[in-house]
Length: 132
Image (tube, rainbow, N blue to C red):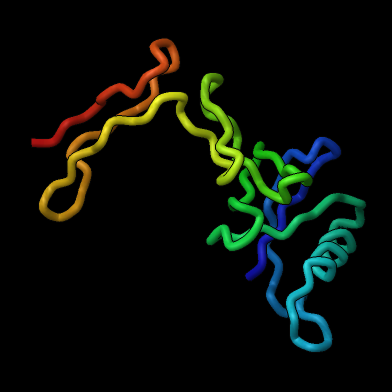
């Protein structure tokens, strides 16, 4: 299945739609984003801006998220900003904390033994759970 983000006039992601792979194959069997856009525009009987997106982030950096943004200059989807203090990593197009999270120790099975969350008021990662 192919996934397409529907964008508004500000390039905000308002929906993510699924299209059968057969719909986007051209006469030579090659995937065509344009065929998906034509299909969705016709299906919804409206003009809209659609961009193909990838669950495994093999293109356009990230899978499109509702309320996220498409940056045409980077040809990338940028997820919604979680916290006001976070900054955009221009390479990954992911939001990152302004300070590094602490190293998290792992148990013998490789699971984290501590869980942190972001505290916007202190601009720092805060320990919220510790396993024994």
